[in-house]
Length: 260
Image 1 (cartoon, rainbow, N blue to C red):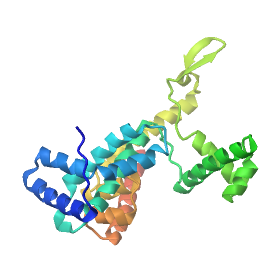
Image 2: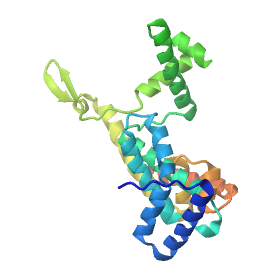
Image 3: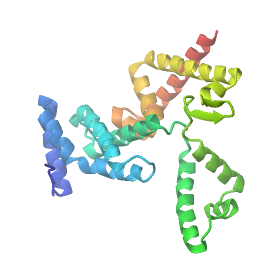
Image 4: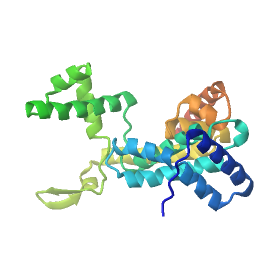
């Protein structure tokens, strides 16, 4: 049975605050579930937005977003004076984005290119309806007010945002084989080196100070702004900026040291 709340915004805030106080004292799973149900609208909004940006189902994104909401509930501190909704949304959004990256979209596109790609898709649909054909690159670039070269780069990035697995079957004259078997040794060695670099980077991250580690995680894994990170951790934006610079410098030294 799904509970439906019809509370006004002030009532919702008051009830959430009361339940959060009780949860911080008792850590009751029942109270936590009440908080999830009460604030489910935050998750629905994010899940709806991201379901229109990818091929994942709304229901799957809703479940993932709820995990972010639970993490926000567990980490929220009433004494900081933050509004819970403002605190929770980055956790919900970050959990969904992390899920989508793990699910397949491993090549990250700049936000501006993602926005232009969405505009191009909308324009192309309208153009096909009106002209009964696909618009040319020049027509799309003109609509987006960018160069044809940049539009072609955006198209290429969008097409290749999800890399193929080396286990992907390929058919040739000699029969079926995997993509990995067709990769030249030198390139495959590069792939192995990339995997080794990833493992070394993960190890270097573990060795960072806790606060620096958290700042880098929020900035680069959850795609939060420095201001959002500062609010989440209860520190200043200047401190966040210093942690980013210090953390990147430490990682650079660590990675360079491993190469010696």
